[in-house]
Image (cartoon, rainbow, N blue to C red; front, top):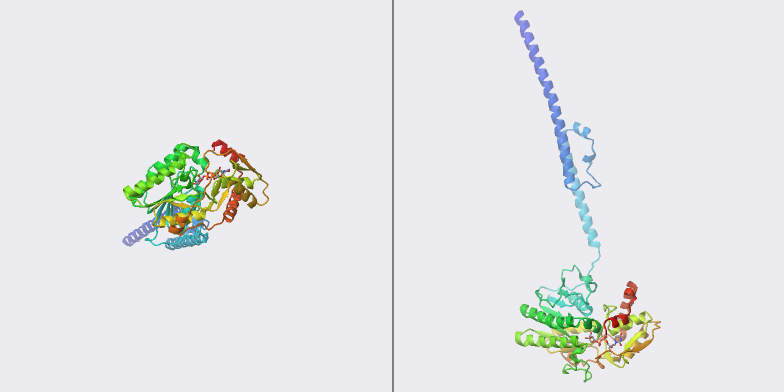
Length: 450
Ligand SMILES: O=c1ccn([C@@H]2O[C@H](COP(=O)(O)OP(=O)(O)O[C@H]3OC[C@@H](O)[C@H](O)[C@H]3O)[C@@H](O)[C@H]2O)c(=O)[nH]1
């Protein structure tokens, strides 16, 4: 009996101890689950922050769920839910990315259309002075033809604005460089146009003008020799000086004052031609020489200083049209698109001697002032004559027989049509900005001792 009572007591004690152990075990387990849940949610929060979800409007719902409720949820189903919501967030991001791509595709093409040329036809073409008046029009045509174009300019007279519509195009490259220093690029063709061309500009710094046309030309001819490129030198009708032969054929040697105010340009260009044919003879460089006559058109600077921009700006503002000298001197004006066609035709031709490019329709400067005045509706300007310009050529008209024969080239744009386009351009320029500090062309002329 006593034995049985002892056995019963022992059993009760063992059961009680076991129950106590189970109770303690259950409490500990509950704590562990709580800690695990807290850690897991902390980790999810961090992950969201890592992928930049802080400001994301459609924050996955798990972020908003009350912590306490979560703790009571079954941990395995929570993990699955988290995975699903992450997946949903990824899907949303993908959808947003697709929408952005569609919106980007809707932005209109910002470049003019360019032709597609195959690898063999496409050339890499360097244009020195490519941000200038003539250079930028040439760049437009070469780009539209599908070539790769490298513009080099020191922005002395050139402007980024003239070529900014090509910025970022994969065929276009722009180098801010002064060609008086050597340049190392690869090119198949070089159009060497860099030089100030307006008399007040080239006279402003005559030493620089000579350096550009001599050292700059040597550098470009050297580059052409190194890379085996064909090079076109932009020469000028000024190589004929104040001509004794009229109209001027390429065979005429000219009549230039070597120490006069225009000599830096006239003689600079004459040396450039001499250099071209010396490199052709001695180094076998393939050269073309264009003798460019008076050219006009949009993108001339309002303060360019040449006769077209001066007269048009004066007529548009009802200012006196200033004729230098008695106005009996003559010029022949070529619209810029015709000139560019001529330059491209010359580069493509096999003719290697100098070629005149200009419009043979000749007018006195006095007549020209009246033509412009009459093309600006309601113009109240008067035409005044003034002091003559030193060494101003008295007659100029190109003989374009060679261009016609070898390039099949002649100008297409009439003076009236070209001037109307130019007047429209200057009208827009005037409306864009007040002419800086109300400075007039006469001020520019006086400042530059033209
Ligand atoms: O306001 C003006 C400006 C110019 N002129 C006259 O108009 C004529 C043309 O003068 P521009 O300055 O336009 O040009 P120029 O013919 O003297 O020189 C030009 O020649 C050919 C190109 O190669 C060059 O771009 C440039 O040197 C000159 O007789 C000049 O004296 C005016 O009567 N009034």
